[in-house]
Length: 387
Image (cartoon, rainbow, N blue to C red):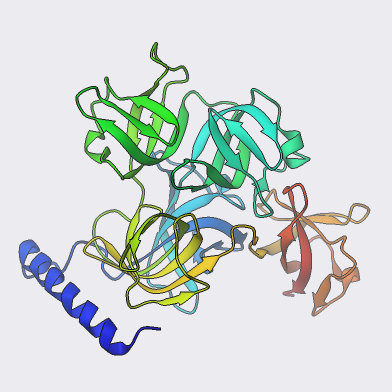
């Protein structure tokens, strides 16, 4: 851990930046908007309230939308869905969300499947023990038919543009495709650019052009057929992240996409300064999956802590609520309002405040566990009774 002196020097430097911003905005408004709020990004790892980056967010009163701004519902939130959460202050690991934005990495047709990966619209999608498959895709990878349209959530890897999937689900009604990644080979005269190994044309685009900058992480929606030059035709461009203003608390999970130094690297669109941060399980290099905890000041995420998370180390999942259905033969139950199935078939399940015989429709429980081999069920390792 860096010394307090190091942190003080860094914060003094940023204080000057913030003072300039304060004067630019006038004496009454502070810096930007939402300076006392919180922001978290990453895959959903549990329900009761949604759990993102280890925080329980009550989303019952939040606006839920996709990254194009269209309204969605709580039923669109699933294990492995990557979201960006705007909330009030995080206190004791909980907060009330005001907005939940659903951020997928890829929508397209399945072109090939060869474990442990698949190819969707030319993009390699990597699958590991932390990849959730929609419960309709029994068998996981083997349940994917060639030519089927899917939506993939996950982390965009540097250089290749591969996606490390956190969730894969069918999207049979899609009328457009989608890509997410870092802009390269930008030609403002020809109005073309690349993301990974895919080529794009924005010749007819009228909005969102300012977001197209070399090195920027963007989300692009495209027509379902390439043009005569083999380029995807962009119909809209969007950027993700917390938007304008500072955030007192930020928890960002993602992949290091570029690394200049400990004081300048990028994670999921954030520019991070970790020069005074506690680094757990480092050193830091491009391609590592990390969680960054800190605060957003003047567009930079000043990290207090950076934790490297093994790319093959799945999260512990948690589902909390009332048992809605119970199959004692298959040893599976579901929670009210959720489609995820919880299996209690393991012989080593630990029970707290009850036994297996106490499982019944109407009982309130918390189930903790890992994904099944095909990624479609939660294999409980511990079940706690709450009533």
